[in-house]
Image (cartoon, rainbow, N blue to C red; front, side):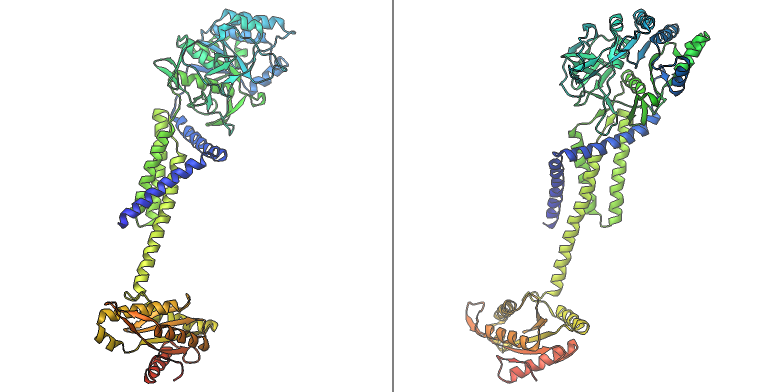
Length: 591
């Protein structure tokens, strides 16, 4: 029965933990706190496994780095540089037959001072259909900027499925590029990036909704052309390009990126080196770096402000995040977060295992080590699952539940043990028949009260009680009736004593009361009250016969009648003997 009760309480604790976390999960602050910790654990896992991932060698970043920025300012005297320079770069890179050239630079307004440069860039983009240009969406009011009407050629074709609107992917306004470029190409994609509440970019939107139509992310557009895919399908929380390339999307319609390392994971070729190679007609340099490559062009200089914080690097250039997105598409390598059902099952298993270990193990250090081992093992399993299967399994919730189970089950175990100890101790110091304290406890309390008197001067008194003619009573009515009288006398003593008084069975028919903080006068009053109560009570025997019983009482007070337990007992015993000599049924306090 006791074992069943223990397991019932254990189950109740687990249910209470889940109920509490479910309840507290409704509060926004708690949700944000949990998400922050879980996201941080994701970042740690990504930082670890990214060391073992190999980026696509066909992706190259043509970077406007700090050295290039200084080179441009010295040579051209301005940033941004004239678009004719970019046209010249495109024409020379195209000689190496790159698979794609994707700009992460916005060409928004015409440059009226450099019309030839604009026209040159337009002609290069029109000439080479592997050049991709970016645009962005936003929420600006129409009073600030009139929303652009985009040509149907930029829309993303979705053969099946739909996406729910949300603030990550649905926009009302756009920053379109200049009209000449829009007319020159179909290869335009969106480069909006999104961050989580802690400012870290872990996910990107592949598809954006603008005025009820869908538009592709720039990297998705590059990937679709690279894979020769004309449309996508949205099904079972996935964006499907083909049977080998599917992107799991979360509740925000974003994909969680799998990172390949920190900054400069991909080959970075500074723009200034390309400009120098063009000037020197160094086609070998161009060929070695860009032949059959997917080239992303963007800024990596911190001074140009296109820096993002990611799980693997707090200062990663925006162009590298787009390259990472493309790499994920080509490798079919996105992270999928497990749903709440998995988290619940794992948390329940950990709670059961931890609770069982706590119940079965008596050593606290061993149990604590076991808890740490379980959490560390689960952490290792999470890293393995993310590395091998791209699964983001919740770590924080199971860990919290495991720790809470450990603490609460230990509390429950301690409380039960305390109650067991109290019960055992009570049995050890209690008389089984009368339920009064036994002689052993009486001696302990006498010594304790003597010590208090010696140290603090706290007075106390002792009453020694004997039931008159009890042996004769037993002989007449039988021992069972004698036991019944002992029980009833004991109840009278308890009812007429204070809760601070200690009522004991001294031995046989003798009983005693230690009256704490009581002088001689007060003790005599209590003794007479008890003597009167017994005298005027009808006692019921086992055969339901009613009889009268009397007691003789001896009183002793510390300091006046003794200074040790033995002296106190001897004096009260002499008073008790004198009461019997004087006719019984009375209280005696002087020898």
